[in-house]
Image 1 (cartoon, one colour):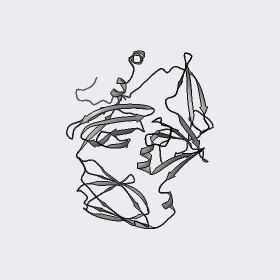
Image 2 (image 1 turned 180 degrees about the horizontal axis):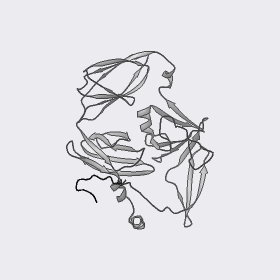
Image 3 (image 1 turned 90 degrees about the horizontal axis):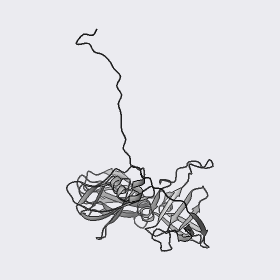
Image 4 (image 1 turned 135 degrees about the vertical axis):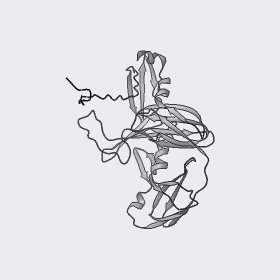
Amino acid sequence: MYTSHEMRSTAQTDYRWEVYAELVIDVPKYKYYDFTLSDSTNIILYRVDNNYYLQNVSYIYAEDNDGLKYILIDNNMNGSYTDVQDRIMFSSWNPYSKNSSYRKSLFLVSNKWYEINYLSTEYFLDFATTADVLTMDYKNDKYISGSDKGKIFFKNLPEKATFQINGKRYALNDRERGFKSEYGMYKITIKKRGYLDYDTVVVVDEKSPAAIISYKNTDIASTVEIQNIYSDGYFVNVSNNRGFRKTFYNLNKIEVPVGFNNFEIQTDGITVAKNLRSSAEGQNAIDFEQELKTQIPPEEEKKK
């Protein structure tokens, strides 16, 4: 017997649901032949129903003294592997091999495709191939052992702006600011809400010990949100016919020019392309999961 105002404790079960995209495509097995040419280029030839097909891109492979592997693909299929459109993967770990152990791959994500242009503009990495040698040049290497310092000055900075130096963010309170810096190459990004980023690269060295960056007004931007993408490493390449081209990494909100832009979202071997007209006001979004579904062939959709 309980009274009308008696308090009782009971167990409660909470359920939390997680939604994720799953793409399953049956890929038939074909016999193939892998050839290494005299210039170290690798090509793959597939045999399908007594016919032979050449893989659409060839690749080259390299390994350094520390066991880090490099794979470059000729993405634009012109015979060169170090063009801005070509791609490279850093691979140091095979989870299916007992003889392989995890090791951090530089400051980049292992087993992810990087566009050469992105590594050049964001990390100052250049690549070249000669005979059987792949050369990777980090432009700031020559400054690492030195202790000389210079200065970087900022002028005409907008109010409430932020800026990034080689990826590290700082807040700005003054309309002009200068600070000491070690010799080296720096990528500067100045951000003002509602406007496109102002990007520039400066070099501080014995020839130019004082770099002056004078902010110039940029065009009004539209914010585009990348929705429903479940990946720890993805790229968004944005371009238009007005000369804009920029790559964003692991950002779900990006600032792009107002109007029509071409978006190419790359992750885990999957590429989603979308042409979108965005405005400075209102919601602009690309639903990665929905766009991915529209690219599945009807017969594959039925199989699911």
